[in-house]
Length: 331
Ligand code: KG4
Ligand code: ZN
Image 1 (cartoon, rainbow, N blue to C red):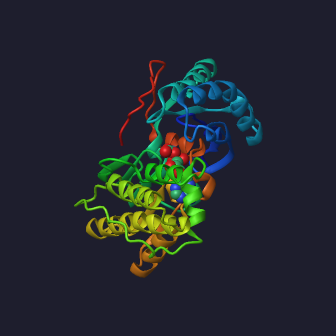
Image 2: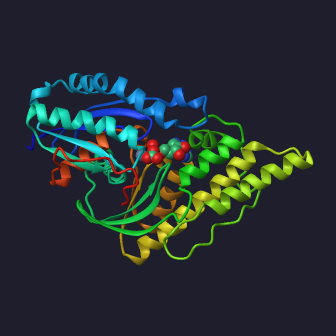
Image 3: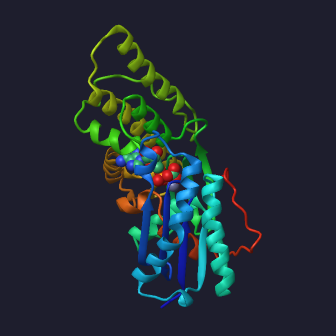
């Protein structure tokens, strides 16, 4: 059995994370130090604060990942680190740590695209999963449909032309007075509401691209108008109706792409994959159509270094010490 030990490092946004993976799928440790409480009072991530906190946390988090894995640092065979997309200052902290360690230990360095990492989280949750499949990546910064025919063969079928799905969740939650990050809050509130109470316009974009800014504006207008008129609204109905519109749009496009490209496995990835309604809707739709459905366990949906280690393991291409952060790295 393959016993390559990969240390994964992730600092693209507001989680400082490190993980140790044995071979491609056996996760030995997965440490995540979240900064969410720190950014909550600002209603969103403050990049400068995120970078400073990563600097404080990075070495203790790596030490903890190594010790929880029950290995020694000198046993690590390679280091996989996120180099983009993300916040420049935040990415640089993980990159500096990874480059220094790789240099000191004389081991290879692997530059990982964070979005590809999200897809690979599924290989850890479902060890039997193999490409080809269709992946819907929905995070705070991206919404994309990707056809994956091999571990290193990706085809971008479509992506968001404006706001990402997670961004729309966060923005609406903020206006509704809910804490950051808004996605899980809307998810919780929506369970108490009627998804058919309010009809918000469905985004009209042909093909496999997405657009959520029109829907976001429609919900914000609805809230503003009600406030100006002094009308009382039921926040749970707003959350449920908005969420249903997003979920229906994501599900429709995903199922259409699966049919067109004859892919019988659907793989959900990214922070918004933790949304209970999205998971349930896709699961049910896949069951009806005889498609296999995969989505990562909750802890692997949002940012973590286990997915970065896994992506790095399969990548088989290496970086050198000139590696730099690429904040707007695409798929
Ligand atoms: O993938 P992720 O952790 O970070 C990025 O790479 O962007 O995604 C974070 C996004 C945030 O917008 C957050 O609100 C959203 O994922 N999110 C959710 C849920 N949990 C996290 N959105 C909807 N429902 C959830 N349960
Ligand atoms: Zn992410």
